[in-house]
Length: 316
Image 1 (spheres, one colour):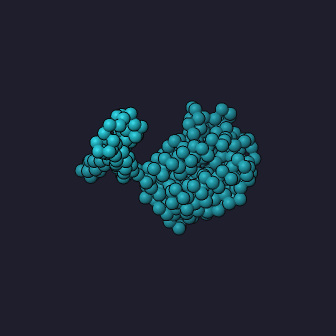
Image 2 (cartoon, rainbow, N blue to C red):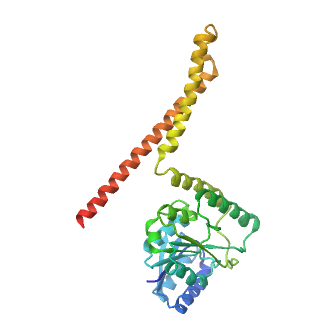
């Protein structure tokens, strides 16, 4: 199969039929073999009924229904698990993504050898205050933190080789950072294509300002995991040693001062520096132990992976 189109959605009953017909027209005009995977993320309207009707008319249409809203990342994860096309296209269901972009995205994967191609909505038809400006700030921070030079991380219109979607784990709200996850998994050929953005035709957006707060928190998480996920001692051990040295320095100063310079003065335990020294040494020790435990967990995981690979080779 050439293409799997994965479409997560929430309460988009008005746009589904029009989107389906548009995608089918593009596929037929380019002679693509295809499947359309609608992932209903707990819709409370008639979205699932529309998907069922489309599936009855077109055997290339498949649907996955969540009984409650789990979020876009979980919807994409479910779609990626079921997708069988050589190229996987993701797009939103609100008709703001243009299916006419699919052939060129497909060619960039198959002919130009990209692992992943992300759309860039250079001209947007969204609110400047609630979407455009926060999105620019978010994308700038993501570029600086991740090292992936994309203008629009959160564009729903993306193309992937099948190998990419089968090797990355999209969880939480990490759908914004799929290019970063792909890069960390070894898929380094990431491209970008300017795509047409269209004004929303039906309904209203399902995302509020809290998505940017969650997005920045997820950015910190993925930066930490990509930077120190394979060597936790480099962070926690270094912090622990520095804090322990600072605390030990305070304690040494207090001891020397009491013994040689001010033996008749107040007790060491009456001085605030004592509690600073004690707290800093305890926290430093805890940081060091956290890094050590992290290294032990990683070592155990690597050994399990080696045993698994060895078992596969023996079975083979």
